[in-house]
Length: 356
Image 1 (tube, rainbow, N blue to C red):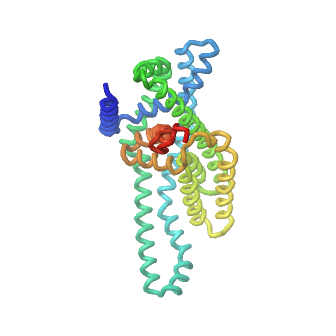
Image 2 (image 1 turned 180 degrees about the horizontal axis):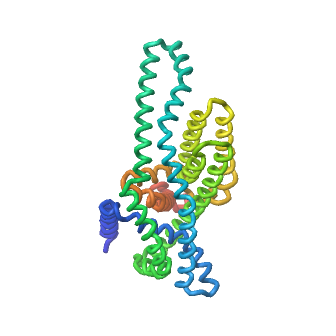
Image 3 (image 1 turned 180 degrees about the vertical axis):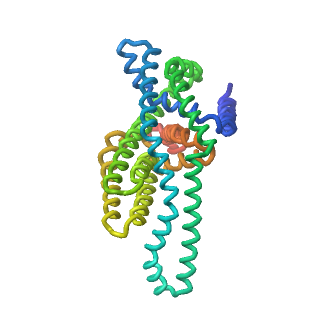
């Protein structure tokens, strides 16, 4: 098989894989989630296996512990979260009205600057948009809490993901050996080296960032609740989860928390308290958690991470969000490898290797 035929073979395979993911995206969520869980838990299985236990027993212990921890977290947090989200949806129109009332002095100042007619148009536009946004958010929250399809998807994730993770963890080494056996023999060494770099990138970012998100969710939830913000626990946990996307989690949580603080009270102290919580959280994340747990060696720029997650979600939904980061890692490693080969070639420097 010539080089052109090999390139055509891999290109056709890649296109077919994308088409299959797109067509099956509605049912792939628990399987992709199971693969992600297996990838994250594999080092623990390897460590237990090194103590002399069989792979099957190590997999059983790790998977059982993971399921028990996840079930405990769900049992403790899910009723509270559902109740808080339902309450927030019910109070949202009142909060929007309160924010509009707080904005009246600003609109009066605007009318003095721009004139009564222009200020009236701005006021009506803001009121209409605020009402639409409030209605959309309330409806979306209601669907999330009570939607039948959401319940089915959640049950499939809860029930199927641990099963997929167990079998992948048990057979992980065999899968790796089989994939290695399928590699083109001439390029096997180079492909293995790139796969090792991809694994290091994913391990450094995914495992480290998941730990960062967990710690931030605990911090923001507890801190916002302590400063007296209603629904602070929900906002804090959501902020920590969204921290997986750089800048998006903190910015979204800050805007929502400040809006709630303004709507719930007329003073500056709650607003300043919320701002202080997020300022401290950013210092902790930027100078302690991320350097210690993630580091800069992963080679994934925050903008590239944001783009990959949003692009994956736009193309393939929740499955695309799960696959966005691995795709970003693969593309990043292959891009750096291709750039290195280009810089070492005569296409970059015609005198390369000529001694000139």
